[in-house]
Image 1 (tube, rainbow, N blue to C red):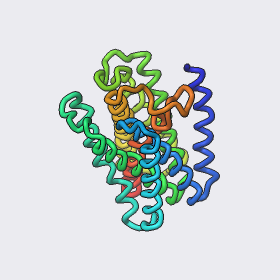
Image 2 (cartoon, one colour):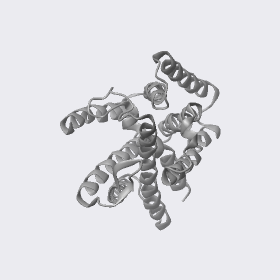
Image 3 (cartoon, rainbow, N blue to C red):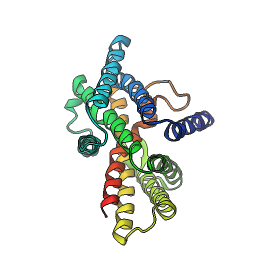
Image 4 (cartoon, helix red, strand yellow):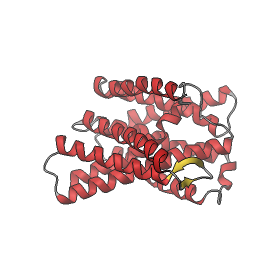
Length: 275
């Protein structure tokens, strides 16, 4: 299984980087939209839609929503970054839901409510990445975001295996540990410092403090993305969102952390531009 996961990862990572570096804006929008539409198809399964026609309708509806945003909103207007940052409100609420689980879970019996949560998760993911694609140094920013999430995942894996005794959320995801969270945060801060040293000189002391703080917070939020999907899977009684990716499950199983990290990274970049 580990070998299978590794082989799939060495295909997926270069594919994402190729999309970042080789595709123009419109091509990148379509590339990420395809990922989101597939994710929406899987999400419909997580919330309890079993008929394929229903799942296809959900995926098509999400595609139509992205198309509407594409044509109705200018990525350089003030509306777009607001759309990119708004999902942070949802992720703060989701964090409270995860921390309090299994209390206050009545909403999990409603397919419509669970389906609605897909909008800030997947919609915010697409909007945030498209906004970053249209910023100066877009390739660096998007690569930075990917490295933060991937590095945090690697750091969490090894720290969790070496020191993972205290469980993070055993009723949601028994494999997650506090040591893994701290390892992921440490890895993310090292990555951010390395990128800032080589590519973003002239940081003030306040800038460095915000960089480290928000890099760590981004990892904390990315963990919540992973845990929220685990919560939906536990409620649905399934292990993976689908079987599209050998050894990894589905597309959602690969982008859940990134969905939560993207609006946090948009906030990080906003703050660093100001300070």
